Each structure stands twice: as C-alpha cells, then as structure tokens.
Length: 302
Image (tube, rainbow, N blue to C red; front, top):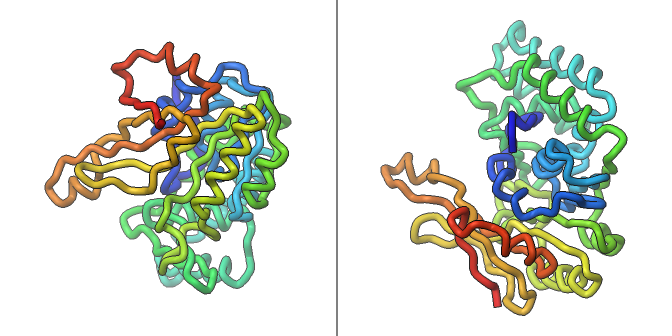
C-alpha cells in the first residue's frame, strides 16, 4: 500500500493499522466488498484506495456511525463546515473545553444525533472509543490531553474519502444476517464482529453482541453459496488468548497477523506482542499459496 490512506477519525477497534496486512489476502478485482460490521469502514477505505472493488457496501447497527460515513462521502463540505463550528466552540465555552464536551454529549444523549456531533464525540473522547451505558446513553469521557482532531485534518481526509467512494457505495444499518442473505458469488465479505465478552457489560461498545453458533451458521451459508469471506475474530497477547476460535469444519485457513506491541502491557513494563487472527475461506486458497511465509504465521483450521 503506497502513500497515506485517509481516515476520518481515530476509532478504537478499527483495522486501519492492520489493513495493509489484511489486503494482501484479498483478490485485486472484487465485484462488491461488503462490511457487515463496518465501524468506520477502515477496510473499505483502504480497499478503495487500492481500487480493489467495483462497489462497496458498509453496514453497522450503530445508525449514527453509518449516517456519519454517509455524510462524509455524499456531502463532505457540509460535514467539514459543521464539525469545524462545533470544534471551535470549545475554545470559547464559558466552562472550558471539558465542559463543552459534556454539553455536546448531553445534546447527543437528548436525541441530537447529527453526523457532526457524532464526529466531534469520536474525535474528542478517550481513545476514540464508542461507549454506551445500559440505558443506551453515550458515556465515554473526553480526552483531557488534547482538543480533538483539527478541522483542517478532518477536511483533507473527508475530501479524499469522498473522492474514493462517492457513487460506488451503499449504506445500511440492519442485522448482519440480513446482509449475508443477499450476497452473491463474486462478492467478498470482510467481517470484524464484536469479540465475545465485549457486549452486554457496563460500558457497551456495541449495540448488540453476536451469538457464536448463529454466526457460525451464517458463515456455513456463505460457503454453501460459494461466497468468499475474510473474518477478523480471535487473537493473542503474550501468553493470553482471547476470543473463541471458529470451528475447524469451516475449513478456513487461519492467519495470525502481527499487530505489534500491546500498549497496555507496555504500561505494565512488559513487551508482549499482539497477534490478531484472520480466517480465510477456501476460495481464497490460491492467494494464500502465493504469500511468502515470512509475512505471517498461518495454520489450516481443520
């Protein structure tokens, strides 16, 4: 991947940094690239930057994220101007920039779900991490060390992303199973579902979790229809594994991607490497066979 791939805003859980490794396992001529759990659509943007697909579909149950992406791509200048206005307000707010964040967050939780407010909350909150309480309210705190992404940087990235994807992308906010029910051979499905254990807890990152057996059945149906897929799922950090492995009967190839040193472990004085698993459908085996072994570790899952 040459040059700098644009991104709208920092987003915890994004595969932006792993995108160069993930794209190595994708065909170069895809009819449609579909992300049923898109988040901020890092893989879609990276794929469009390399012109990998004719068309793109992004879906996420968080409707506000989808509306933000749609606004960025279809009406970029509107998003840039409105975000700039909110961002500048924090420097003149009577209670200071932190009180300004809480005021904007209260507006969001009162039903003001505009794309520019969603963008400001992401740009300004700790680690770009979306968090919702059990009551469905956005409850993440502001990052006290910074003032959020400068509008000039937002403008550069949003305009680039709009140029890459405008007229080539469809936006949805429905259950992932409804997406998979309508895919066709020639499509490539990239899925980054919530890890087991991150939903239905005090600070919900996701509106809904993904039931394991239900997810496995959905993958089986893709295989039955000869639709290729790539799935980011489990992984490891040092001696610890996280997430339940996908079953061997799916006949995927499991690739371990090097995600670098764990920042949390580093804070504790340890140097633990993090690896994230990528599961590749059988139809992608010709690409896998061409990959030099030193790029990553892999094993046949089954």
